Image (cartoon, rainbow, N blue to C red):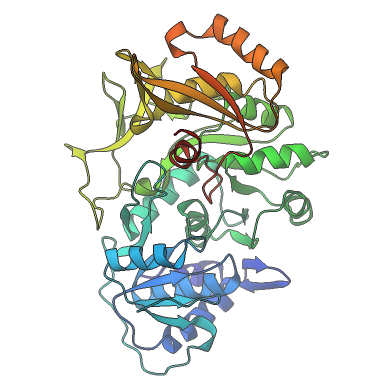
Length: 452
């Protein structure tokens, strides 16, 4: 079973990938991957991969897939100590890199320099074999090593293709890091559908807009911070776009509304590393998206009375390598809190982020969505502070210089829109809001920095 081989047979002369000034057809990419699979030489059954968004990284991934080697996908923005800690956790001592890297007590191989002729091909690959191991972002605690099988990735592609309707004539632009599921899943979608993959090494709003216009890009995926920057720079109608998959963090109703008003075909979604990208999505033509819905209730989605969101499906992982996984029967416990209204699902917050004040539940996301309407392009986050009287109270952090007008407008709207117990006990203007490398605001890091 090899997806690139199948794509080469079905779509041989179609363009598989474009990177910088270079392009390869599916037949050419497959031939290179066959050569790469051999020159990688003898390797353990599981290796770490340290890679940037590049053609070399795509070739490396496909070569390892041909070998049936489990790929531990490493975040290039972590420190060396963090990388070694993760590798030890999943019992890996060999790393292949497409960029310069040195790690203590690890064998680091540079992809371009590998040139062996000795190779052992693993022919025992099936749909249940592990394709990738990715670590969760750890925004609420320690990162977990998530196993993702070939079956998980294939099912994720099927769900996405059903919702976004892409095929061999589509062009996917990848600007999310390849080492995150939001980026890696685009690699999988394109090879399984015969679409063209256009790779950008990093996100730049102006370059992305020009690429979409010049290359007639049909599909892409953004985190909210990227979409905000695109909207700030956008002065033309991007008529080739058929779908922008939003994920990686909560996309506020205001941001979705702004995008739709500019003619952008956004799909709001809910997904996680454990579900191999999105497991729910909602299209821009559905009015419920403007209220922040992420999809509809189905047999695969269950919201318990206490709001706990449970999911099941072939795209859902069955194990962590370094922690216990929580299932309730057939359903995976996401750790998120949701509500259902008229058959649509709305994510309220991570259960770990819940603030319990005087016995009442406060969801930071509810407060943040209200604040977003009044702070323009500023960022905000609600964190918790210990309180002798109430147990916990919410504190609102807003980046940038203090602004009494903004503060007054926010407080006035709180009086109209929020029960008194939900009001932040403090509003602080801070130098900067801390983000994770995927563009998601880190509640944990902001809590640690600003709340003493």
